[in-house]
Length: 208
Image (cartoon, rainbow, N blue to C red; front, side):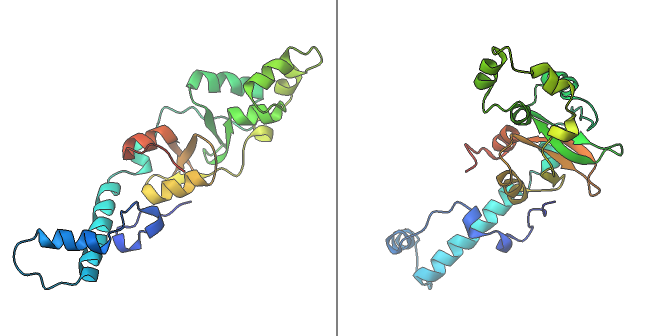
């Protein structure tokens, strides 16, 4: 689980905040444009800028949480069903991956298209297509005899509904998937957070 985005902007790590570094010339030029006498040093001016930037970042990012942008129209998978059954549910969902939950609704894994490829020993869908053209490839056998619990990625990376910007970034950095489950304090599924929805909410172009 990931912590809530800090309310105190002093707790925001510098390497997570994109901030332009001010040179002495930048500061002096800005001070010249302020009328009157300024009893302030260049370092004081730069410190004010840093603090103001941190405050602005905290204000802008604090308004969006995982719970506010998650998808709730999610039909989770059960660990006991076979991959051929799961494939239909996944295709109908239009998602690249779905959470897997136990009998109590707690998230125990994620099943993605990549998990299917791994189980079928293919690195891409093109390679899978070529394998299917081979008469010796046992595609049906692999899907009928393998359960979701055997093929899913576990343990899953999840976030709480109140997770903010930094917590979401940290969670996405923990796995290459395009989505992850949003859960409550006990791990029960609440929704699905997509990378593209996260990017759109924060107007980000990419997550490096």
